[in-house]
Length: 231
Image (cartoon, rainbow, N blue to C red):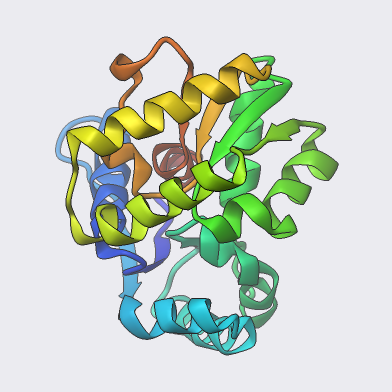
């Protein structure tokens, strides 16, 4: 079994979901008492969030690149950044290590394409929804059409992530808000919804709606499990 390297802590709430998903996936794949071989470098999210607000992506790129190097030096065979937003600096991280980085957008797009989804709605932080680093990859590398919420709704989605989900708070009212926004995206032609922030799966479950939901945390983790367990 290969060793999975993680850059986590952004937030730790979703990193905990990764840990559970990776171990559950390996147990399902290999059976018995098998569990995932994991090396985790968990970062303090507060200074990173402050850099996000300042738009200082170069500093964040250096921080995550150094984290990736530490994970590689500890013996990881692959690397995951346990957050959608911080894939803004994925190229900088990949350039700092020799092990492969599994990109969360690529892993998600492979599932979407496999399900014959062409048009998809995207929920996430404002950075993920509005900037090109994520949407452009889905569009240009995988041929997907991506719909994002209108600006007021983007603000609601973003605020719930940072003010509630990253703090471990799951509110019924926020679930209702997200479902209403997802319904709007579906009415605009979305065949499914990317939960493009690793915390959103704490709030929305497939049983909450008839619209197919694509939980990037679970998809990303399963992609790593598949690679770790392959002969």
